[in-house]
Amino acid sequence: VIELFAQPPALSAYLLLAALLFSIGLYGVLSRKNTLAILISIELMANAVNINLVAFSRYSGDLVGQSFALFSIALTVAEVVIGLAIVILMYRSHKSIEADAPTELRG
Amino acid sequence: MMAWVAFAAIALVILTAALQVVQSTDLVHTVFWLALSLMGTAALFVHLDAEFLAVVQILLYTGGVVTLMLFGVMLTRRINGVRILHESAGKPRALLCATALFGCIAHAIIRDTKTSNNTPVDMADTEALGQLFLQEMVLPFELLSLLLLGAMVGAIVLARKVDP
Image 1 (tube, rainbow over the protein chains, first blue to last red):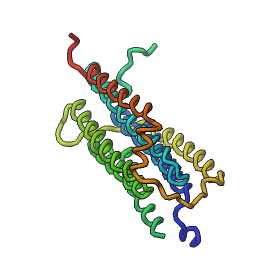
Image 2 (image 1 turned 135 degrees about the vertical axis):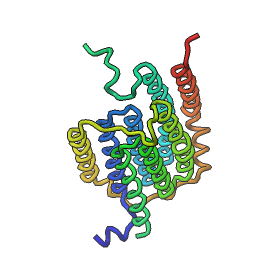
Image 3 (image 1 turned 45 degrees about the vertical axis):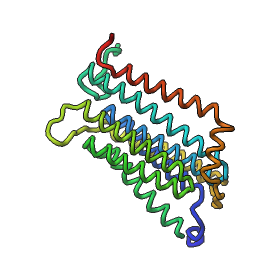
Image 4 (image 1 turned 90 degrees about the vertical axis):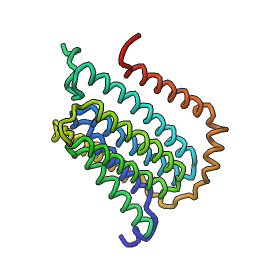
């Protein structure tokens, strides 16, 4: 164990951290009722993916991983903007942002 | 050794904040815990030699997304007093799904011998990243700006009050 900690962290340490973060985000998406809270949990998941990309880039020495992370950040921002617009629309039409509120399509 | 200490400290901050994000019952607190988690990730990017990404992370996420989220919170709730509460549902099943997913991913990571690689390569600097963006990846880069414009216009159209 001491030998393991004498060396810099292996790639798997970062991947495990990202996996844990992704799972926490998934838990949030599945358990939250509030649409905004679900959107926030999706942010956590996207963040975990970015950690993966940057870690792989660091351990292979290839900058393409970092550029993918940059694209991914910009895409997430666009997603948040649209998501928030939809949440505000939903609030206007249902007076609530609970995910259970829209039931028009229920058979 | 130092690298492990830094990694452990950053990981602790990120994970604690993330747990609070999915557990806190106060929506405003949730947003601020998200901000802390995202800043921890920015620190991890510095730790991984990606300084430019760390700056972009702070500018876009903690500067942009968190502020937007706060606006979202304020716009979609009638504020009764100071606290804006929200609750969770279906916790045991969600916990089961998340644990199962983590088990699968962790199993795959530990089984694959390539991930035990512990010799980080020295990364090229930000200049090389800029060169990459404006030469090899110039087309996706420009498409990205189009996408952002589209998202912006779309958000304005969606959230506008009245149809002309």
